Length: 260
Ligand SMILES: Nc1ncnc2c1ncn2[C@@H]1O[C@H](COP(=O)(O)OP(=O)(O)O)[C@@H](O)[C@H]1O
Ligand SMILES: [Mg+2]
Image 1 (cartoon, rainbow, N blue to C red):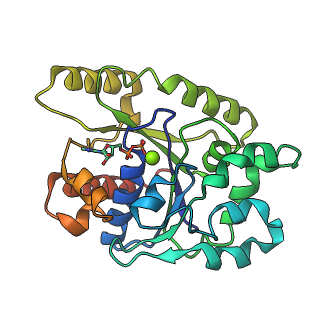
Image 2 (tube, rainbow, N blue to C red; image 1 turned 90 degrees about the horizontal axis):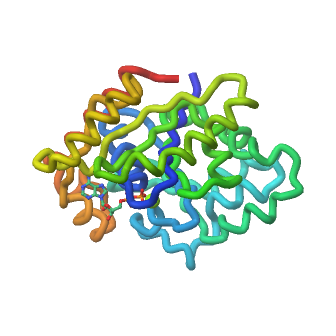
């Protein structure tokens, strides 16, 4: 069976998308899975985190979109890097990804470019994790239609549920043209058990989303910021921390369910 593609998406910024993409990717590797993490955000935060600086990068995920589709198989080896510390393979982003909207305007079938390109590498991995951009556009559409599962991190604070509308609208529009409707799961992040607001949001989330909420909730953990500042993933700086443990639990939940 080919790789499961997990798209980490939420229109809201700062909810833990990039942290989830990197930590989950590393957790899956620690569970013995072959994982590839792809940075699809023009802000390139995941790339910068792993010391791939956009101003220096020449080869990036952008090349997949500009190449002839028949060349995708040759492009992947040029843009995939192995990351020793986290243990996963990684494809950096480019700030020029934001030009795609205009550049692909006339291209037929532009929403499926990425999905078709992924077919070339789907047997090389168990999981392909996509760190999605926050805005609706051709990049997000390409990521979503490639996904077996859309994972929506939700910051468990007061305003967290408001930003979801746009994402559900986008998924609803895509579902009209897709053969199988998009599967999604929400993930509570930055949870502070001492804060009543956090507990209320989590309860509301479980009530509204029912089984579409992971059992695992990611608590606030300063090790994430620490890891990010050092250009590492949490398993490298603090493998026994609560944050590390929780992403391991999330990985186990995903592996067990094989939701697709
Ligand atoms: N569980 C957490 N506890 C504490 N800080 C976190 C947690 N998850 C993420 N962060 C921090 O919050 C900030 C935003 O997270 P990030 O993953 O970059 O969000 P996004 O990709 O959605 O914009 C980063 O500084 C990150 O280190
Ligand atoms: Mg991000």
